[in-house]
Amino acid sequence: MNEREKTIRLWFDMWLYQKDMGIDDIFTEDVLYTESWCPQYGNRKVVKHWFQEWNTRGKVVIWEIKQFFHKENQTIVEWYFKNEMNNGDIEEFDGISLVEWTEDNKIKALKEFGCNRNTYNPYQESDIPQFRNQKANWF
Image 1: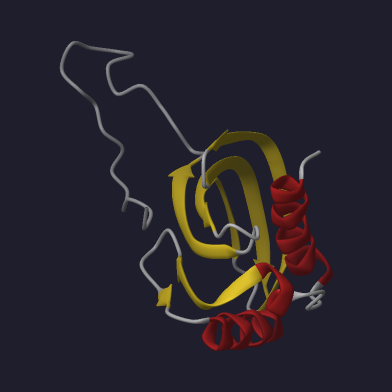
Image 2: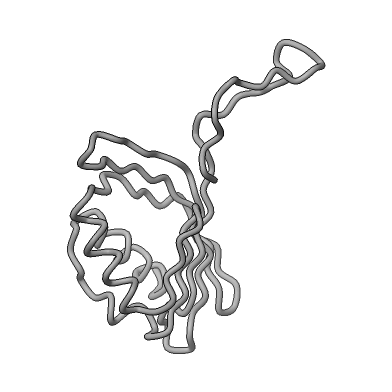
């Protein structure tokens, strides 16, 4: 496992253990972090606040890495994510993160993309699409 993969695994483990095990060591001070559903954090101080605050409201129970792709100063990681919020809500989805690195292997940008796991084929029964009568998730 290379250094960049170890850094990403450490970030995911911080969420699983609800513990800051080195946010200052893995992110640049001016990191730009974008969640899949629009929130964006413009520096490490805000990322740390979000991490600490969010973990008072819920728990990440699974953040499983499926695979990595590396090219120059970028990494893409594919993953499966599940959380349980204190109010009883449960969220789970597949996703990827696009990570941009500095020369010393700190994260300078991270952008998440999510994909609903509740998929279906709208053409299974007909040539005319049959869409579910439900609100789409926030991806």
